Image 1 (cartoon, rainbow, N blue to C red):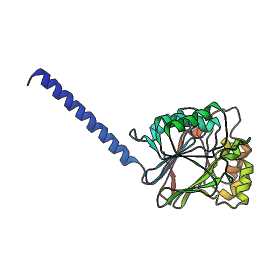
Image 2: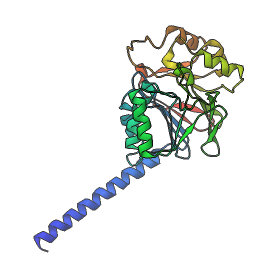
Image 3: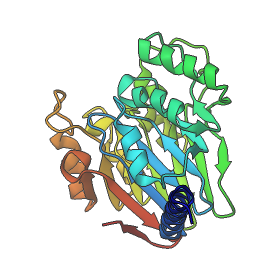
Image 4: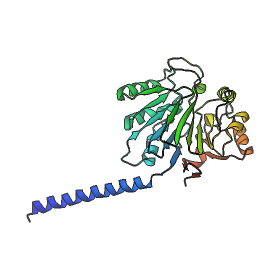
Length: 289
């Protein structure tokens, strides 16, 4: 065998070995994916970013945090070959929920977006709308009563906004937040964005089915949300506060922490606990270590 042919053969064998290795890694990562539901609450500082992985392998991202940290979080949580997100939900267009989603649109193939469609003119929001147009991502407007099914045993129900907000200019964007409940079998998660007491009172009055095992605490633990009446309806076992370390707002407030503690709720804070992941088999919920 000539030197040139031997060199070519060695390169071919090396390339084949790399391909086999990558396929093995992909198979291993795929086999490690939960057969149930996984919900990742990402530590992205003072902002929200939550990834849901359904039993049927759909991926739903709720909010994207205040910067591009969410991209790194997604890279660690998803297999390297997974570059599609089935649904992105923007609860409301404040920068601490929106900014990272612009880069997500650039890095991942997003199949659908759910948002309120409220008018907003910040640079981050304009960049978001321009990227949606560029990528030609279908967008649906959220309204109470919508139900999104993700297989036989899992769904997301929309509780807020109660009215159609697309094209409207709203001064209080927090209370336009999409409030949704994820149910998988007998287990459930309530995501409330930054919705405050006004929305909580409306949901309680409307007798929405707020009961949930896990509550994403509203507005990073602000004193303007998570009222006692609201908590009495939710009756969570766990609460997750997405909050930045030593933030200038003083979140989470002692008032909210005290309410949760008095109810015996186990509290997780991303400023202290980092990323928090829950697994559900449709009957029970456990915390991923």
